[in-house]
Length: 256
Image (cartoon, rainbow, N blue to C red; front, side):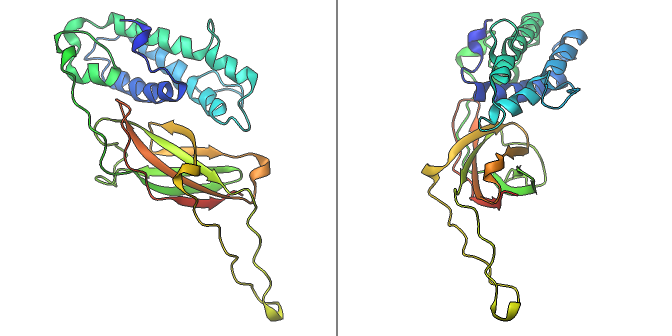
């Protein structure tokens, strides 16, 4: 096995890590993974960061890196991409250590498909994955100062956090209206005014891809200069083979 089996873009690599770390942890006993190796992998992936904005794990560093408007500094880029000490290299090296240590007899078809590994005679006939026919359900879970938290649901199992079969991530798209939403005009006599006309949702082609996640929540962060502006979102499912679902309904919020 070699590193060529890993996704090539950082966005896809993040989705891959979000899928395989919990998968390996849940199947560690069956795959005979050394306890120290799986502990080291989880530490690299999501160990508690002692000081805000000084991340020592992949998840916190990726959150900073993914917000290119505010927190993608040169230092954060180096934490991810440094060819000798970056978290991308450390995560890949730790995964390769685990993959190479799993006995060949322990791999099954689901392992090979999920982990993108080629290990045996069944490689020529991988489990087929089809593009999802339904979009994720999308809602604004929480709206805080310069942070909008989105929630995703599987339309077939809306009370579960599980994604559809074959889906590796939810891809998130954003559009920010550049003019802040004006306050309601005063009504005659000093009463409450009528709500202002709200900006209509733009065409989907105007949205920008801002990130992906393997979880059911996504935190979208904003710059100070975006406060008061209206923001729109839509999302899509993405499979292990890069196939995309139809887009979700568009949802909006005011950046506060």
